[in-house]
Length: 538
Image 1 (tube, one colour):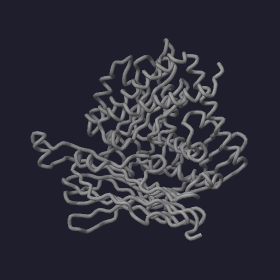
Image 2 (cartoon, helix red, strand yellow):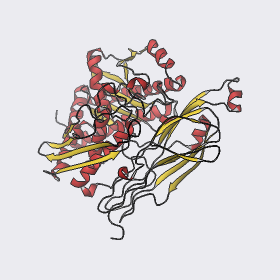
Image 3 (cartoon, one colour):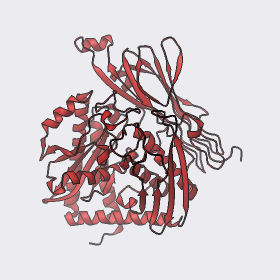
Image 4 (cartoon, one colour):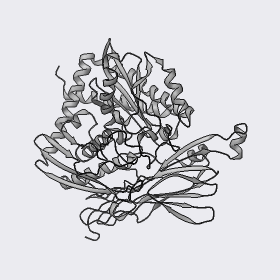
């Protein structure tokens, strides 16, 4: 079937609109602020081979997750056993997922008795059990310390809920009401996608639907290959360091070699550090995801993401490294390392396509989770004298690197994150934590002909005692700071501080786990600034 260019493009945008409607359904149905306020989730559509048809533009970190996870799912549950009304669930990082808090759902879409597509959602759950509130622990030695690991199984079978799983899951998380509500929101998003895809199939017919998908893939592949022809026969190498400071003072090294040749783009991570006994290891799927992100933002920033964009890209990730660890390595704090994957690939691509690149961005990603019992009088009164348990998180942004044409953007969550800062009102109504101040740190961006974007600092006050905080950041040392280009200066460093009740201020390391907090104590998070481009005054 021959598909003309107008019909192809209309279909592509129709598919994207389905994913975006799924996104709205999930966000508006979710119980947890990390989803409905911070936007830490993704929705997408796959064909029956697991190739991405379309994805809603929420969190780039999930760009490569769904296809990788799907191909593991069908090894455990063959596709012929995916029936109308089924929903498959998994969160296992060693079966194509990311880290245990990111729960992945798939639902099959049937039309006229034939499987034509898959809808999928990924959402970060505020807690799935484990050693600390929020599950993520930089000092975890094995994945067994990182909460409940869900193998591929049917959450729903022909529309009937798996009550046994439901009970097991609820018993192993700190906020079962919110977590179960968030799973239901993911199901609602999948069902929304099912309905809309059936409408598309009715419009085009089953064969026409398949032909349009193929045409979209072919066009995207041709577009990427055309972009690569402009930089053909080039090579580049880059490396960066990121802090460990969970189990070692020695930094971790990410190395990448990039080659543009007749076959496309080869990206080889050989030379990167071996996996470590901590939660900073990055699962294979997350490395794939952020590599595709880096290629996309340089060569096809305006093209809707689908499998065709990835066809020209070959990725080599040696097993046993921090970018492809062997089970049962811990991975819960993998976000810091996957941000570094994007950073190092972009650093290499800046040598190949400098006009489409920026200087180093903040990948500091200052993050914390606080959990405990809310023993404020008003909460005791509302709960019959019992103190409710809460878990709350926040992520703050920093500076984007400058480009050859303009200054970097301030106060953004760059690369794989794209998460929103938690609104102060939401934090203060859901947890005994007050946001004292949110500031842009003037001058924290690196100097240059174009200066880097400035960072955020945020300060919090504890309103109850007996709380526990865990968190992390990066880029707290000069050797890990955002890197300048063409003589631009590095971005300012990140930091974390605690102000105790006696007024003394202490600096926390870049990784902190299960630190006790008391009423009146304050936490200060300071992100990194973006780096500058070009020599200042030139």
